[in-house]
Length: 564
Image (cartoon, rainbow, N blue to C red):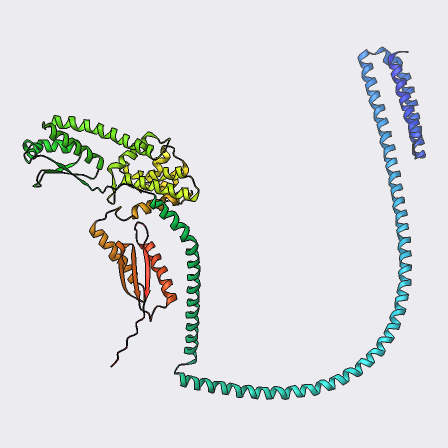
């Protein structure tokens, strides 16, 4: 038997097996029909295959394979169709089964509902019986209530009549009372000489005055209590710092005087046609004033370092006797180097005396330059050293870092000796300089905030500010021009005299205290306390001054009588 016959036989067997599988389905009739069709088809295919076997055997092997593949596809398609038919039959059977189950559940639910309805019907019957009995009782109660309501209505009619009569009587009394009140108000207005509105405003004004007096008295009590607690420790710390600080104070100005042994030397200083004095001024940047002052030459300039270089150079030239442009240039250059060395030496000595370490060499040089700078007539280096000592003592009393406070006190005015022409405040310039040379952040903040240009963020900042004020406000520490001093006192008196009730104002203690005399009829004791606070606040807002100004308000009442 060849391959084609085997394949045909295999296809027949497969078709027969498919028929047997269909025969086992739940839908027997459809399965038998399908099986018969399969058997018939397979028989037909088998017969056709036998007839064609001889013909196919003679054909080429390729044609046999094509026919076999075609036959296989046909068998598979028919087998797949049979499978789909069987699947549809099963699905229909499952749907019928599900429908049957659903109907069974519906029947069970209906039976349960019917049972519940029966029970509910029984309950309703019982409830209806109870309602019937309640209705009979309610009917009897209603009849009784109707009788009581009729009696209450009669009583209410009687009470309503009494109330109406009482209302009429009250209305008559109210009209009479309004008439009497108006009559009394007219009499009071006639007696007092003012209207009702004026009397109300007077009472309101008296009430406001009482409230102001009470608030001022309360504010005075609070301030006195705060001062009692705060001033004691503050005074102790400040006085201790001042008491333990001792320093020398030199008052300098913008001119230096060089003494010469004879007036003949003045002509040599001027030189032929003024060439020596012009060369000297060009080298030093200082103006040389040669006048009729006997045995003295005045050097004028705002830069204290250049003025010191000029002073020493002129002294050396006078001692040497050789005064000409070349010698002047040589001496000035030599003295400039000597002064620079002295500046550095002064800065190092100051840092060592204050027991400070780790300062940048440039900061040390700036500290040395403070020796030749004055501020309000006070030597800047002496002021900075004094501020450093006071800040250190205050910090020590408060249990803070005394060394850091001493460092910030020494550097707080270092911005004043910066050589560049900078328009920023010296506190900001000094802060930026300290930051440039990597000083501690607290020290930089204390330097920048000691005149309130920036916000204080460290504990030593207010200490340095207080120490600076103490050093600057100390009697004799600073010297102001007479005109500026007089203008400041006049402005202080004018500002205090601008308040209502002030009669006279006197500035005393070199402008450290003002005494304000007020009219006792316009200003009470409580108002005097408030007036002192208002004046001090106005001074703080409108004026700039070192230290603090004490405001004393004096209220005096004098009674005068004459005996005849």
